[in-house]
Image 1 (cartoon, helix red, strand yellow):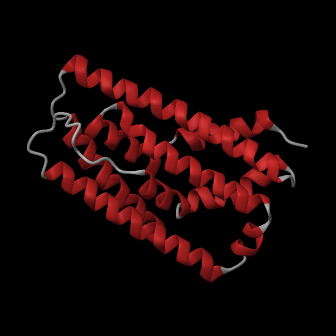
Image 2: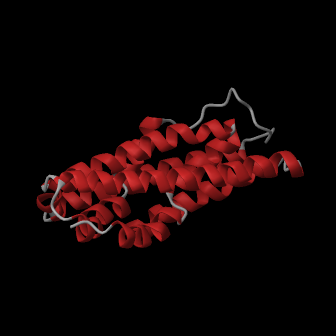
Image 3: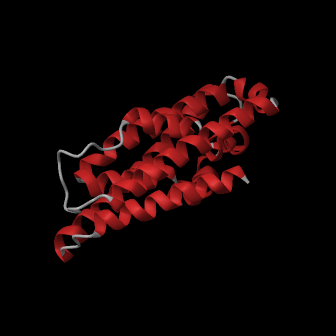
Length: 196
């Protein structure tokens, strides 16, 4: 029997806490506007769906029992977080004009997907938390990953819209640089924290 209400109560603090998807989405908004959220949502949504599929068919149980496999994923995640952190930080440092430039390249679906698939927090969530609410049906796992994606989408859109309005209303010309610098340092910090 599935328990959607309690799952949502557990999911909300996880989905709303700033993590990699949040940082990448707000960085994209700073680069290219609200449309920059789309590739992050697509990559993250696909990643969450794949996590739910793997957990739902039981592969996750076997996978989680392999210390080597979990360490490989962990270190891949640390590597990707570090690379993106450095990239964001350097973008902020070398940003002579912090205004939106719709020709700038935003982080894409592939990068968001890789970061999500190597995100230990997402892996552990789908290995340990989701089964408590979903039972054994693969369909239930998809229901829960869909709820996760919907909540994340609404949150990122709300935050992206606030950022866009703030930039326009308050003429925050240096906000993009600040977002890239803070986002880059945050991703590097998350990578270091995962490594220790």
